[in-house]
Length: 540
Image (tube, rainbow, N blue to C red; front, side, top):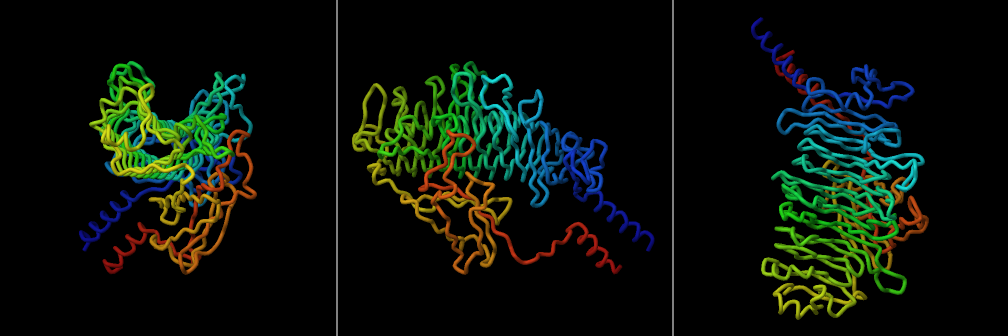
């Protein structure tokens, strides 16, 4: 019997030893339980944020969670957390529904609010921003360039459900040494500044990758950043290695990039600037995204300089094995630019533009292109332009190059889309969705949630992402599982964080809806329940 009890005791100790731990972090100035460097990470004696992010794998282990409690965390932080067990993550998350803000508007030599140099860590459910007054003009003596998140190195990190906004540089940089990482369900806006030359700087996402693992950028919303929305790019002119490859953009909504700087920039660009021809943008997929500019002028024409998607840049490094499928691409006169592309599949896209610009040196690669089943809207009879060569109508484009055999060309005046452009469910929260809607007349749009298994009588809250601090609508899901979204601007008809960043038109809207069960749900502690059931099985 003693031997049996000894075995039971050993098993229990083993279970406890392998139990995932939960630690707690509070702001340093919290009134009741301030976070400190000498804390233990308990609820009663929490850590400060920088202490928690610097702990080694002997203290914070694979599978552990660090909870960030409500408040403003002033500073610029470095996370060296590292999970050492395969396929197990450390999680850094806002606690339950707490509003957690990392505020980088402090005096510091660091160039990002949060630098990430560890591996296998999930960062989710908090905000990264600058609060208070600060300069956006590089000419000002007090200007500081500071991005939101810089993922400098460390493999397999995850960035989920973050708000990254109002940082005076880029939103998030996911650099070449951070293999296997992903950015999902984030809202990234108003990042950047005006450079000394008067132009906007500061992308929403700047991404590179040198590994064979795919870097995933999925279901994010990016808008009103001072420069480009998503930049899949390397600026180096004399590269010795390939660092723009194996990247997937899926289900993102990117709009009005460059607006705060007073002009439109690319919502997405995929290219490199390598004159050696080594660092080629390669093996990249762009699937089911929405790229939109406020490109209509009051007279019904479209703005000239409003590119929404650019593929390729320099002739020495044409993009290779790039797939662009199922996207909505809405821009100005030059809404779609295919400047340098060696091998490209461009299918099932809807395009609002003046011209489809194709670089003059790429026609030799046309046999390696697959163009088909695209719907193109343009005011021009000959929208396919090879600069300094010729403009083509759809039939001559088809016959000469054997492209777009099953595609169609329509007048801009006939431009229309389905009312519900996308419904993207959060992988980490089944009750939260990103919604993109379109109605040419600006009428309300109804969305059917029947296929998502949301129970009727669940409460919901709707936010317009461009005014995300204000509840747009509350309600309870009816028996038919349908929710009507208001499209008219009404009280939201105002500039955003500066006079140049205009809100989108009433015919296009992007929203967040979150459902909440009104019944009280009992939460069971799984680890404790496992041990209780184990002892019950033993007869104790």
